[in-house]
Length: 245
Length: 169
Ligand code: SF4
Ligand code: FES
Figure 1 (cartoon, rainbow over the protein chains, first blue to last red):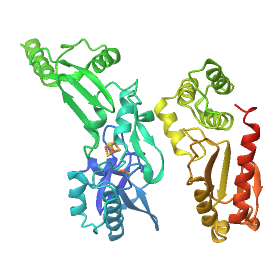
Figure 2: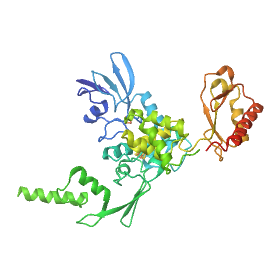
Figure 3: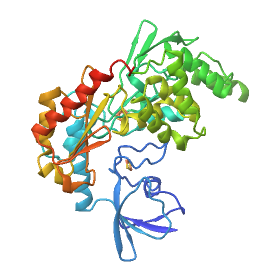
Figure 4: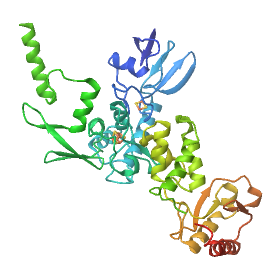
């Protein structure tokens, strides 16, 4: 079905989100809580767009709004720009301590605000929680409510189900999750893990529970258990080269 | 009053409450409300047991337990004072009552006295606006509370605890 985004005609699939359709056509809509891997969460509202259907106009979150009819979409009306700038202002007030937010704060020419906690980094996008869910660990969640809301493990203690995969820290756009690697150990979310080395280059690259988890999940015996992603790629490339010889 | 979940008896009591509900996630809130009502707070182990019972991650249960004001993760006082801070009570000076409670007991909304006797909560309208400002102590409703009246109420409940100290555990 045909839709238009900022006047560009686009062929969209029934049920796909406006954001996906836009991305596929190379049109950019700003997002904060969206990841290609998880789809839209509808948390940050940064991706708001204006949808016109017949003569009804309304604002929707493009990352969760499914296309079911031939709509006209506007992505940057003055109203939308103001909404985005407000979102950034408020988030910056909550969590100013990351390059990511500092940059956005400048880009959107936000008004000056007094940060609540100058050290805070987390913008509550929930990507870390989503990542942890996808890994299947469910070690972290948001706790408390309102202004006290934050991401944590239950009771702020080390979680028996955390495997130290760092998926949360890797996906975090603001670097809010601290990971300390030292002497073959890694500490994350109050928990310390023993790491293991890549068989080829000898670099520490992941934790023991992750190794077990991966084995369990995929029975991954292909092309080497204990290789870091780099060396695994190299080995795979060699194997493929050998096969095609 | 505080439950010690290391004690087999208390553990058993928690287990009994939790397992009286069907093992489905939609009963999580009901279980926690029941625990809060009967034990006066949600001990750590009770959340772990609930998670196990309804087959949900502890992180999800903990998230819910900390989200709702009705739940407390630390033991609540023997007497729970609920000061209404709805619009009518607010205008009629509920903040004076709340201040007065702070003067008398040293606790703010959400707090519990160190001796475990009193907890203070605020509620957003009890639906008894004609009686503003309203205070509820356990299930007893006190209308048109004044600072003087408040001191009497606190005295009354303090007295109770001395009399019943032996019988209550
Ligand atoms: S810790 Fe990072 S990924 Fe998690 S909610 Fe905060 S900003 Fe988002
Ligand atoms: S990207 Fe759509 S709400 Fe966050």
